[in-house]
Length: 456
Image 1 (tube, rainbow, N blue to C red):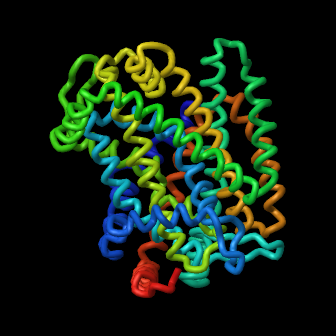
Image 2 (image 1 turned 60 degrees about the vertical axis):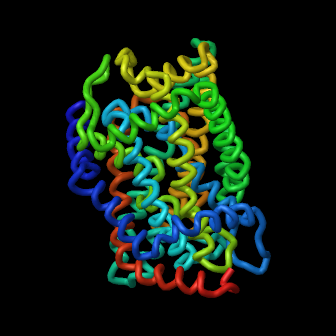
């Protein structure tokens, strides 16, 4: 088993390393940002206003769920353990400067998400039972033509496999470990797995409308809870925030020397781990989010593209920054007496709160974030299954996906972790090819939208 896991890790290291996926993801983001004439930066207030208005919809327009709920379903899968543990991992491996490069990837990732969501709505299809399905597999097939259907099929296969790993079993395993540890053994793994099975089944078997409804309530609550608690903590320690920002910016271009238990990092390490954690935190370019946005009830695809580009901003610029600043303000990152990134996060929060409140906050947040990720990835996997096997596969997929919850919660996932990372990364390659080839269409749609006041 260790041999298999090691082999998968080597492949994964190449795919997600500095010579393939990272420069491809970042390069596409830069290209799309320039091609869109910096719309993500210029139109962010417009997008935030569209998000607020997107809570309601015009019944004359086509779709399944409101634009706001489509965004919340996307955020449900995006805002996950990576916003807490992933940030700590970036700092441990790349130093404080890694956070700066996370911000850079999020800013350029906004253009990528804009294009993904726009194309998802433009090229979506309606199944015989009335589902609005879309995403990379559909804009590859319908936008690039029949000769590219093989690429669409590859994406759907990668996406469906990844949904069971990174979107389900890895998340439920993380929840179980955290809850059992926090309860001091009061809750057994079997009890936690049973609770997750019941709660997950109640939501997921109802399909995208029920998931969108729950995500529309859960995601804002959990995000606001985490951001408010984190902001209060930072306000209490406001005198240390300027030094934390200074540390981020200086380390971003110089690396960081070894100090305390911290092993030190170079400029290359700061860039590599900052870009990697940033990209896989907000999922810009992976092709997952547009699957959710395709179900939005919206007239103009560009309008949903505006909501799509908010995703990296909220995920990385807001939520990840809260985690990063608390870790840096606490000083725990230089001690080196933590077992893993999750432990570092808990130690940091406990340190700045002078008690166990940090443990409560981290455990509750990790549980909610991971559970919402399961809900979001259920939609992604279901849509991939529909593309591969037809609309009748939707309910069967949701049942199997639900039954996988206790398997993940109670299993050792060494190989599953490795495979999950690999298939999650492989999703990006077909999607990025399609984004590049279809980019002229998105650029024209964006120009037409903003030049026509009646486009909305």
